[in-house]
Length: 450
Image (tube, rainbow, N blue to C red; front, side, top):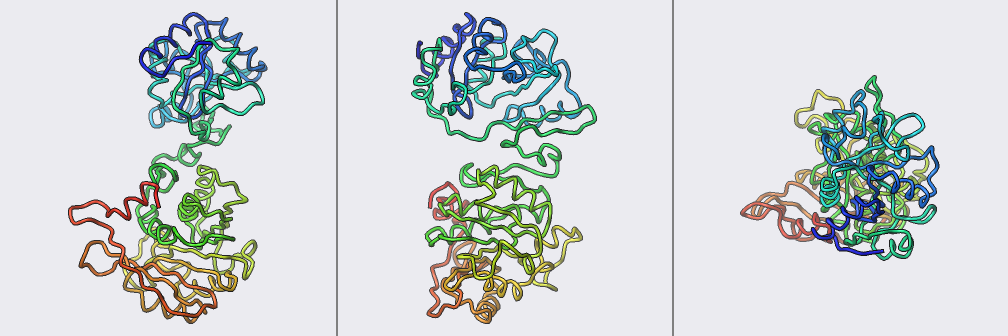
């Protein structure tokens, strides 16, 4: 087996190897893959024997572009239903479409039902290789059957070195979720065959939802596009407020929305388990999707749909170490309520008031457990009073200002169940620099650091 680096010279060597019927291991946007040219039936047959691939499990295909000998038109006979829209919106990207196969495709990539799985990889080096080759290639992981997927060149060499013609070596890969696998139907419906980085709600209604991320891509999440329902800076500030706190034991997020607060806490090392409570069914569905996107299984992040004032197990009384919440900002009768019920619930205390929230948090917490929340700056006196009445002793307080000299716009609070002792007031957290942009403290957190 030869080895080449992922340089222009290495790409040319890989192209020559594929043209000659060789098998090439190369880095993709997820793990290392095994490529064989669709123009070389002998290579496809050899790859099938190597991977012990049964006839009812064909190899997916990677294309480059839509037209030409290496494009989508080479492998797909047609684009049924919403396939064209999905291609336009999400390619190149982590989406594999199961489409009617073109008539001249080799059997190793065609299913028993006459379909082919095809995607356009967002990896620029892989896209260039396919374009230079002038033919699509297979998309299968560089490992023997039953072995774990390889994420660096040394693993490829150990597992497949004796079976390959060329290893195109690049940096180690971060094993991310495999592509979302979808079959579009002629009637416009989508059948989800494998969950992946693009959640089904986003694929079905891309005008209603968007895929975004925080902390330099470390926390991906899907959210509504509608104003008043999108993630704001508030859960980010609350997670930052808790970055150095003890995180052992169950954590309950009251009004979890799309689940962003547990996801941020998990990204900074909190082990959980987390329980998110959400009144709105659509947001609860998105929270579950976001837990999957961030590889938090249901045992670590469970989403309960219902009214946080009455929702039952697994919210056993006195079982939580932490209760966190980013509740609706506006008290009843304050501000203008949106005519959209979902937005009104998210922004105003229609589903639960602060006066109701504090006793709920106390009921959930074990003695010495902590509650943390973020509120408008003008509600400081009210919040301190309501927490105290609920036997939640305020421990830490930090005001948030937009710029130096401005009045606080937000308030970060932490209180202890059944606690006693003084309240620690921390220096104000300033969001923006005089010339624009976040201050260093906020920027470092958003960049993925503490």
